[in-house]
Length: 130
Image (cartoon, one colour):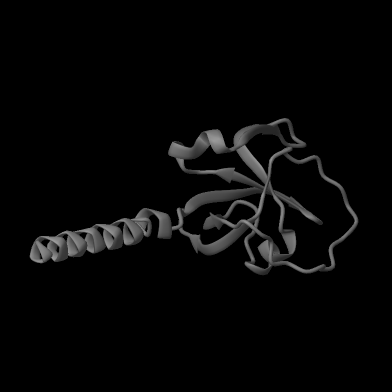
């Protein structure tokens, strides 16, 4: 009977370990990357057009100053961090979403530009080729 009890305890310990480590799946640890294109930037404002067809619904429609309709856009919330990446209007880049902005105050001009209402904090991973 003690032999059975020991086997049961060992099986229970293995099952518990599996359940605890099962929560650390690779999909949870992998951060999704996205592709975007900077379609407008002025002073403290930058507008990104989402280039991934599978996540178009994560953007909003926005009409730029010339009247062009962009269907999958957002405004960059952490503008200081974004400008450090050196992305220029028209360039595409890979990025990931960040939960908390890491930026501090930075100097920007006092101009204004109408932007999409959706704001996202992102981290630029790298510029991409067209």
